[in-house]
Image 1: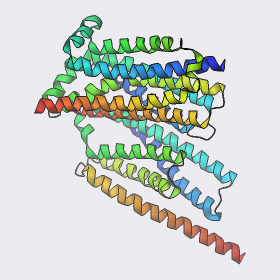
Image 2: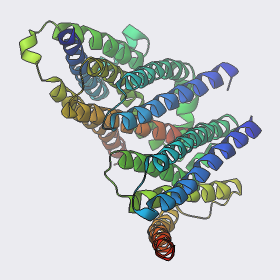
Image 3: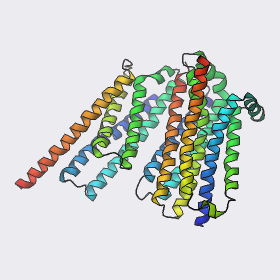
Image 4: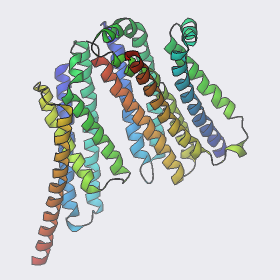
Length: 150
Length: 109
Length: 173
């Protein structure tokens, strides 16, 4: 693997992890009885930007390298389901994350202007948890896919 | 000011739902109806790039159209829109994973 | 690179496991009179923050190892059942933290899951380094759950013993 591809893959993983971490911190913030709305807004924006960065770096790695070099190895090996199920699903489910995070950022921006009601806070927690869980599924899928390439 | 922010929040929450539904549908349909996948490849050099670009545009365009709705229709509905987004995102994830699992198992049979 | 990751991972583990252990000690001391006062709450909050920093360092450096395996052609290690058990336990630590924050889990189980999970992650990390692949995922998770049940009982017994000692000490003075 060339240095550029290593940088792209590392960036994809790193930005993805930053996004997941920010979603975790966002969720714990929103779960407080008096959530720190200004900080929560920053976490959501940070997560959205991280996922966009992960999208670009991962996309470049995927288009430049995965399709022609990694996918054939997985398909020819003992774990073709690593591509057929996990890669195929992951590359599409990942696309949810930047938009879910961006929607959270904009919704929390409104919550910053008014004291958020308990119902609004709970709804924000639900979306934050869903986004966090989806991001975890995507992350774990990435490990499964890499493990299938041998 | 609050009404404007509320409208923005509602529009983007709903447009995120629309985008998630779009990604779910185009993922499944493009795999079943191959001319769509071929068109995406031809237009955007790669089907996945095409889905991403279309989804990105749809997110902002649909938010713009939703924001044209009269304010009286969206009052108090942000919580509902967030809950719809919650369920849509989880169901979309389940649908995509289930679809590819089913496709793989059909391949084996 | 490998050495850097080991150092960062060790620091994360020490902060996380040490912090989780300190939380149990601080909680036992705080609850000996049945009430967590503001100063005790402040100490606990600071310790939670240390644990979170430890978790962050551990997770990021942990993924650094996974990337190193990818780059050095050791991708078979990514299917190691001990690794997947460790990943599951990290997920349990995260879920437990959210449940505790949301007050959806009581202290009895919350502290047991936290304490046992961190120490199990340490043990699994040692096993991973020694290349012990003989353990299956179901067996590791089975022993882990037993440890959680035992840990919950032991931690509660420690808190009760401390409370009784405090009550006796109060009566005699």
